[in-house]
Length: 162
Image (cartoon, rainbow, N blue to C red; front, side, top):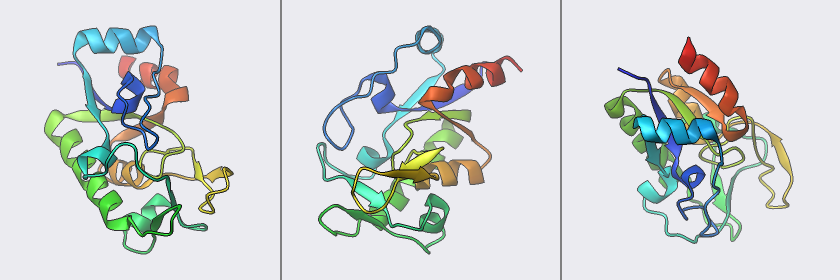
């Protein structure tokens, strides 16, 4: 049975990002995987009840997704509203979806407070980024799912061949 890949729904063009847009990833690999039926699309933020569009949210400065996951970090909208618990719910739903579908890999949108895997935003809502990972990435990695950012799609393809 081919390996399944949990994928950020926005990477398939679904208009689920905070600003109501998709982030279509054009790739022959993605087209092949879609045809093969191995993609499991999910937007953890929408799954946890967030509306689209919604205010932008960032992990508090100096914290990481793992901190949020462990109850030692927070995520705030640009209005200052604490949305930590809803993001934690999204992480739980992503793990549940990955386990139920048999996903060993995930291809997620970098920069997101949920799905970031190489960078997230600064936590100051100033457009600056920093190294780090979101809460969904932290949760998936904790459960043994290997996470790749959209710019690492070729690395994911190599892992699928192994």
